[in-house]
Image: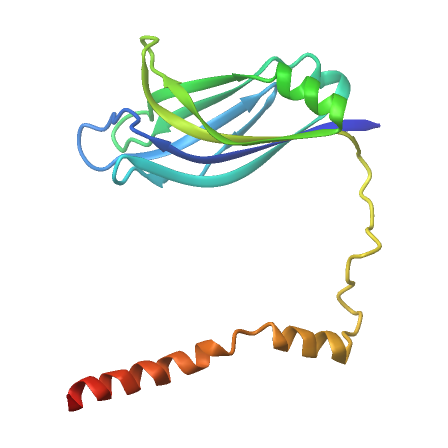
Length: 187
């Protein structure tokens, strides 16, 4: 059976609404696509920018992808004394992503800012999200021929080649810095 995989990368949010009366905000995002739902880690909202940098995967059979119309991102603020506060949400239409991804086999959309919609249908802030859709992926796991097995011995040539990749000039940098300090003292 073939399935489609949608990878979602939530990077950050900027200038979103602060709902805490007391204390610092702590934000998280709830992603919902079809019947599946994920939650990001909680991140403090320092300097008007909230960082998550988390990736999530939604796996569905290709027949179900055609029925899914959008993905919803709800930004929430963690509260201590009451239920978590709703900050805003973003809905992204998946029709173009799924259609083009199915035609080409995959599609990658670099992270881009999307407006955050508040409860009163106004906009406040942006959330940056990236997408990758892979169509026609076989469900069974494949073993790749080029992968190195853990028990497989490494050759001496590969060890020497990796040794040459080491930037040797870093070892000389502290010595050069000490000499320049000594020269400045003597002047």
